[in-house]
Figure 1 (cartoon, rainbow, N blue to C red):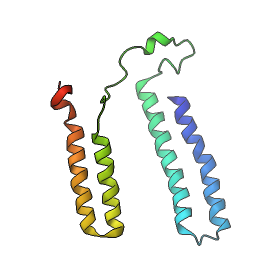
Figure 2: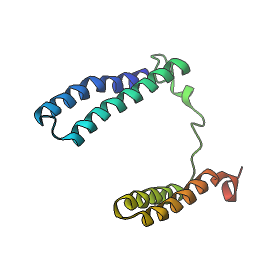
Figure 3: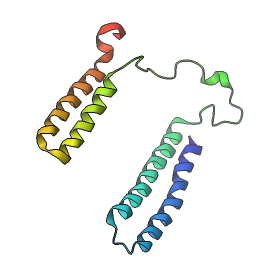
Length: 133
């Protein structure tokens, strides 16, 4: 994970001068672009710090070591829902909710309803039906 963390932390040294040069070129009159590029610096810093902190806590993975073998990473990597439709419902609810901020608050309430249904369905997906544990 150290390679990934230094890759993200190295992005800070690229995006920070880009943000400053962008601000100077626009004479700091375009607040959205300047703010977005400085937020990009902050996000790459946060992700890089998290990955560096996690790599120190977890230790070296087989792909981080020079003497690592393929068989060391064999086995179950994680638990993934085989054909889940709940992320689509959750994303639709979020999209309708953000549309409601632009169009009207009555649309926001519909989006919140879809979001709650999608979130509850996704959380309890493995508690009932074919994939129950």
